[in-house]
Image (cartoon, rainbow, N blue to C red):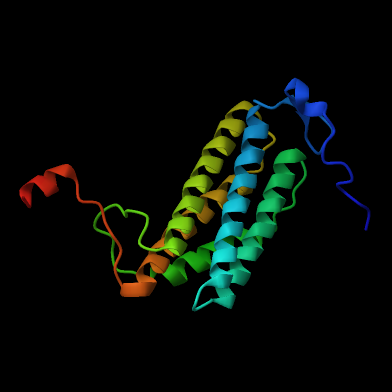
Length: 193
């Protein structure tokens, strides 16, 4: 295997430009660069989730493995964004997320209000990952509006990932005490006084 990253500091980005994997130069403010960065950030937040899951008292090896599989797929998504017209994300990635979503969601009670993140650390990290996934999705949509060479499956995968992270955050919130804090609007709080 060749060394892919031999030089980290090249000073080429000092002018506000960067290269994508295809070799094309783009401004760092470019929507494609924004989408690549959002997916990279999402991968990093899921990495925090993986590390936290590993160090949890009741570590769940199956969940760790699933999250690591998702991290690899996020690199595939990044590759598709960095090398337009190339496909890396396997076809079964989205169906895997859909199955995981169904497995988790069927164990949860119906949701009556918005969930307030913070029931426990694992759930809060998963909510953070979900919100970054939603931002990555918005970036990919914006990119699709500007350029036609963004694979549709890339957007579908990120959308399903944010859905899965939402139900997973609910499951993790309920792991300690079967409770998850839900929003009580100001109008409801006034009634209870």
